[in-house]
Length: 184
Image (cartoon, rainbow, N blue to C red; front, side):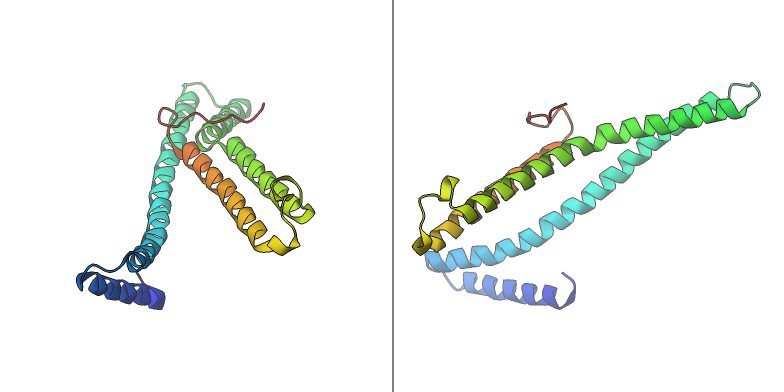
């Protein structure tokens, strides 16, 4: 890792590894070590994921633009005299082809639908906590700690479900698990 934070994490990892080497620590100590090691994975995996997604999306975009451009150039190369109408018609066709390709590949509509669904679910949880209804109706003011614990768990569940949906949308169609499609 780069920068002061990276050196601190690296130093912390070195001390953890030394601690591990000294013998078999108690369960609590092993859990603490594991939690500290997980920090590195939490920072590294999303970074690597973004890098590979960016490369993949760039190459996929090149393929889509290249195939649409090839078709467009072939349409313009008919040997006939080019008129403004034929050039405009070919340009519009090129734009529509690109729009269809990008819409199909990146699934903007589905992403929007699932994000809004998650936002609505989290808002519903927040309202239920505030009003003391739904899953929170059994808790009084003296159990605020339990209410916040349940609220946090339920919101995290919604956020984890959103992450799963996002991952499924990023999968090729033949590998993605079926999800509930947004209504038409």
